[in-house]
Length: 532
Ligand SMILES: Nc1ncnc2c1ncn2[C@@H]1O[C@H](COP(=O)(O)OP(=O)(O)O)[C@@H](O)[C@H]1O
Ligand SMILES: O=C(CO)[C@H](O)[C@H](O)COP(=O)(O)O
Image (spheres, rainbow, N blue to C red):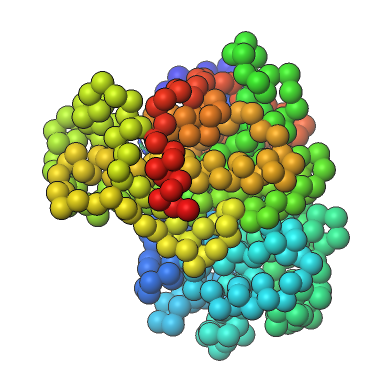
């Protein structure tokens, strides 16, 4: 195994369930990642805007990757396990068996994924109530949250799903239940996706007003009536059955979980920036914005007092960093949009063949191709005539409009590799402009942000990172540990074991600062005139 130092003592396992894959890491007491494994997971799209997964598939993938990262080490040195996951809705019956979330009655597909937009009608009615809980989700509830999805199940799958359901879990909480048998929910999931208040608990009047009064009558037992801060140790730790599945010792500490973006935020927001001359050095952590960029991008800004930002989720108390309020901006599809634009282009087979011949990823190839065709001008100017509006899956923030669609202007008849590379660049730039709009909305409402801390799969793309620096005009800090989300998950395990006093216990080391390059940005006037 890579670089193992058996002398160090304690290890922690972090498991991160993203949209496209499950990842696990073995992390030591310094928060350094020693081993990594990943495994793709299935997704189904039985109808347009219906996205489903299987909790059994996901658990199997968690077991495969966990067994891989602990191979060859003394299992007695493993002290804690933490999970993070996307905020997808898992449905189980009263005996904890999967229930179908689809008209086909396929109970294997028992997860409505976070990006599923089937509950448009339901969320519209929820927003029409103007209930006071909506103030804490940016004023408008998103179709990606859990209340509209629950209402959809009640109205569309009453007999096959709703009436039989015993447990509705956010995916991070499903995983901690599966590992420990404890049904307690994480404060992170319930506050961010289920309208729970860290200060006041559930609001009965909301659930009654939207037509989900049966959840109140049950004293919230189906959606959670025991709520714990992320990192809290659950029950008696890992059950013997789960221990066998995962290849870990029974009884090790298992933590209350985090949503994936929040684990990434925790993994990067405390980075040690001393000596780089960054404006955030010596300033409160509230001057930092963590951006977690995978299938989607999530923009996590914290404050000492609640800040209400129209169209930006939150303010959520203690949902990421204990004692701080969180605002969470987001773009529903970013990595997925880049993949969609590139893979759907006529020149994609040629790109694949050329990248394979050079043993490069398609994105590394495209980035070097852009360097070739830009000649002497800054790369950003290759798109003066081509513009993308990136809301192909609606706008999460700051417009909070799920009906918005994508747009490309400036297309020509040619569809060669140069065109593909330039379309890819315009897409990346459009996503970065979207981030700028989110930052502007947060700053107008009272945030004061000087530095970005970026992680997630898109953090491996230098063009994506540079365009975020150029277009926002802010330096972007990358952590030494590329898999910062996983480090966040492992820190949960370290907290649950009692080895770390709190989830903020570890400062992540900074690896690089990407500064804005003046004059390298896209011609902003042309972009703004095209989209206004
Ligand atoms: N080496 C890479 N270079 C460029 N882009 C990458 C690379 N690896 C992943 N990506 C991008 O990151 C996205 C997936 O990020 P990831 O964090 O794995 O997603 P998720 O957590 O949603 O499963 C992909 O859509 C792809 O666009
Ligand atoms: O809503 C979110 C966090 O609140 C995330 O966008 C969602 O969980 C998907 O994450 P990822 O893009 O990393 O798969």
